Image (cartoon, rainbow, N blue to C red; front, side, top):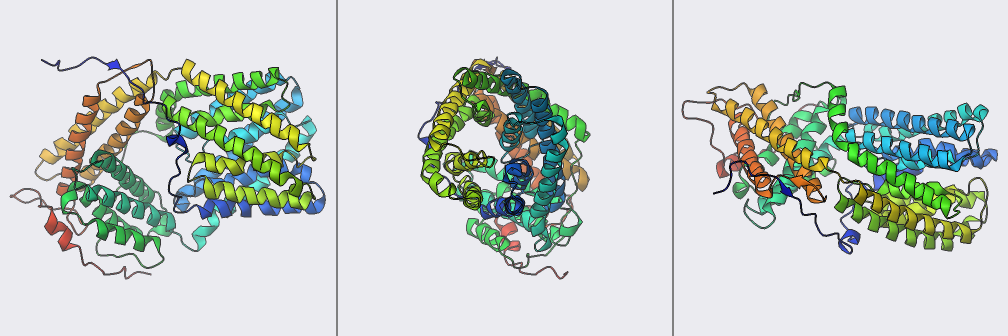
Length: 573
């Protein structure tokens, strides 16, 4: 007989893929937005410095300009806060690097400081869920600055250049909101509808239904968060979007009765510029976690300690190895190692494969383009802009494809202070890429993320608590709508975290994790309870449900038919 509480068993990490890591995916829906934003952010400062004959200062303005890469998926109210944090974080890392470079020229000290900065940047970007490109750009900026000749008197001026370019990048990132203030919320809702349609296509039992259900739950949760953080400027569209989001939740509740094509059609309409269908005003209260932002950040930081340790150790050893080989730019090896570390060893391996392949192809592209870039400083700037656009346009297909453009762009940036021999640059970059990847992967193997198992156990317990809380409310004859909504949001978030924790734990080794069937059973029970909260808490037209003596309102095919023809548009401007 099976024990009621089976003991943890050693995890079996996934096989480390090779060709699968290089497989191209679909491009991001908004691939052109970060690509155009980085060009618009980088071009004016660089062209101004070119006109002034001070292109040698461009690395400092590039530090601020690259902040335009962040937060494109966030509503504008939240984007403003995130971009402000990114600019301030960039300036903090740049300040530490420049002051260190001014105080010492000891390469070992510089590499050590760079590794510690990389670890802090990795931990904070993951804890705050910063999103792409994560810590890599910040680490590139601070690591390169460590090896730039510097004196203390120059530091304030260089920081001022970074701040000015960062302020311009902030404006570039926020500018689209003037034309379409609720564009990110529309995209998030459309993605939720699309993910729900994919789950509905499985009818809830077909191949891949579990993954599709988890993906749809995560997309719905992300869309709800987008609506909650959209700010006042998107208030007019929020009720209609919330009603459409309800359709996605109904599909999660009754996938066999949902209409996948109808969901996809509404998603396509949301991606356009037409009005949003509107026929109700769903209640959308913000879930109350009972934690302050500082407490939430701390609770997210604690499990990231092994990943931060990996980053610090791997970056330091990669930099030291590069120094031992006599490479003049050890920060390239340091940044390569920093770019590898993901949530698990399996994902870190995949990123390592992508990084090596992308960088090796990228140095060949640089070798081909170098004669053109050396025709003059204007050609150098234009080539840099072209590669910055290409990097963001391609990286959503696969990291290695974007790296094909990132690598020559980084090499061209190193020439803003003066042309260098292309052969030397290519050789050093290849060596540093291989050193950084090999040493970085070795550090990932040496520093086992034992907290991945602990995180999975905590996620199981949190899911159980969230499910029990929702079940208690469902047992009440007349649960408060706001309380039921908060319980539903909490359970959805717990299920998403459980799946992320399970994926991370399955990619680690030398650890003990709860048996896989416990995770599967917890997910199944959680999704059944989550579906019941949707049935009980909301009616098909998007209003709070009124419980009757006969029990909760019935959902199913009739619910979808009842809202199939709601073409009423929002009457408000």
